[in-house]
Image (cartoon, rainbow, N blue to C red; front, side, top):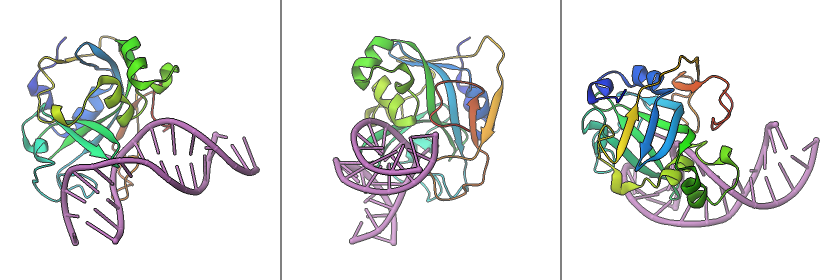
Length: 182
DNA sequence: CTATCGATTGTCT
DNA sequence: GACAATCGATAGA
């Protein structure tokens, strides 16, 4: 069923694990979350580590708030805020809804290339800085809990230079839509 | 399959 | 002026 705000009022570590298998859509376009990463308070790799700034204030904006930022001047990444100063980075989706629209936005044929990375899925769902601060638990977003059981795998986070040993990346076992192998 | 590299801009030193 | 929670193209094994 539909997930509510209280789901996100917990440690990002717990939320990141439980978001695997959840269906996320934006304006009817999206799919099943197959990869996440947790970023905690007092975590040197987290954008919250330096304290509140205009860019990262959504990490303190309340459970379920979207934190969207621009990376490498090129791509947007979507996070969901949990307890203050923490968030879960949505790293990959298995496309389910609005697939033809995603193909048009991504300009790629291969369905595996649509949402298999944080920058890719932001482009496929057309998410950018305008959506920073919006709550994920209301329209035009929707978040729906899994129905079938699944197995979750963990590993070190990707693309960071600090706290790289922490196993705070989560994935759906055997998914074809991960951004990289675990 | 892995390795390397350029793109492009907001934010911080 | 440096650098970043990335991607896609390309070269080589």
